[in-house]
Image (cartoon, rainbow over all chains, first blue to last red; front, side, top):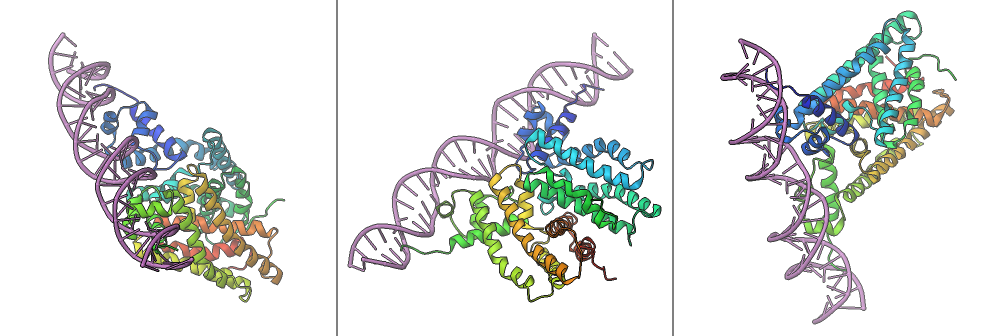
Length: 200
Length: 200
DNA sequence: TCCATACTAGACTATTCAGTCAACAAAATG
DNA sequence: CATTTTGTTGACTGAATAGTCTAGTATGGA
C-alpha cells in the first residue's frame, strides 16, 4: 500500500560502489545521495544512519554474489577445480573493478572491516560474518578434495581458514600495489598451503 | 639557531597512536593536536598537511621498529628460529596494543594502505614500500633456511612474499575478529607454506 | 647583548558533515 | 473516489572539518 520506489536499491548500489572504490570514511551521505539520485529526506526515510545503510549494502552484495559462488562451488564440480575456478573468479572481478575505477579495490568486506573494526562493532561483526560465510565454501571444497585423495590436510576447517586468510592477504597486497597481476600468485599459494602438487 | 621543541616528535607519536587505533579518516588534525598538546599553528609549522604528517609518522615508526627487527633477523640466529621469533613478536605487539586500546589494531602500514590505496597515491606508495622493506628480512631468513637444508622452496622471493601475505591476512583477520588468539595460527601456517615440518 | 630564526598561540574562514523536519505528492487499496 | 500509507523534497541546524594568518615568544649563535 502506498507509493512504490526503487530508491532504496539505488542507495544500496551507490553506497557499495562509492565505499568500495574509496573508503567508508571518505564517502559522505550527500555523495551517496547524489550518486543514487535520491534526496536526503528519502535517504533517512529508508535508513536511520550511514552505518545502517552500509550494513544493508554489504548484505545485499552477498546475496547478489551467492549464485555465482554456489555455481563455482557446486558439488557437481571436482573439488580442486572449484578452488581453481574460485581463484580465477577473484582475479576477474578485481580486474573488472580495476577497469571501472582505475584502482584495485580489494574485498569490500575486508576493506570495511579493516577500516572500522576498532570503531564500529556492528560493522566489524558484519564483516566477520560475511568473511566466515565465504569460508564455508572453502571448507566443503577442501573436505571433498581430501575425501577424493587429491590433498591431505590435518584439519579441514583450519586449512580453509588458512586459504581464506591467504586470499585476503593477497587481495590486499594487490590493492596496495594497485596491480592485479599480483593475484597470479593466488592459485599456487593455495595449492602449496594444501600440500597439493604445484604445476609448473 | 632559534627556538627548539619536541612538538614535531609529539605530533608524530600522537598521529601514529590515533590513526593506528582508529583510522586515518576518523582522526582529525584537531584530535592529533590536542593529543600531542600542540596548537594548530605549530602543526602547520611542521607539516604542510595531515597526509604529510602521516607519511612522516609511518617512516618514524619504521625507524623505531628497525632495531628490534634487526635483532630478530640477525644472522647470528638460526634462520628457522628467526621466523619463529618473528611470529611471536607479532603476537606480542598485537597483544600490547589490545591491552592499550581494547582492540586488535592490526598492522599500521597495512591499515592505512587498505584505507587509502585508492585515494592517496603517496600514502599507497609509502605503505607498499614499508611492507616491502619487511619482506627483505623474510627473504634473507628463508634463503638461509634453504641453504641450511631446513626447508626447500622453488623461489625464495616468492616464498617470502607468500609468507608476508599470509601474515597480513592473518593479522587482518585477527583485527576483524578482535581476537589476538587467531595469531596462534601464524607459525604453523608459515611452516606449512615453506614446506617445513609442522610440530604437533 | 641582541637579533635572526624557529617555534607558539589561537582566532578566523569557508566548507562540509550527519541528521532533522514539515509540507507535499503519488499510488495502492477499500 | 477517498483514504491511508509510503515515498519525496529541500531548506535548515549545529557541529566539525582542513587549513590560514598575524601577532607574538623563546633561544642559539654572533
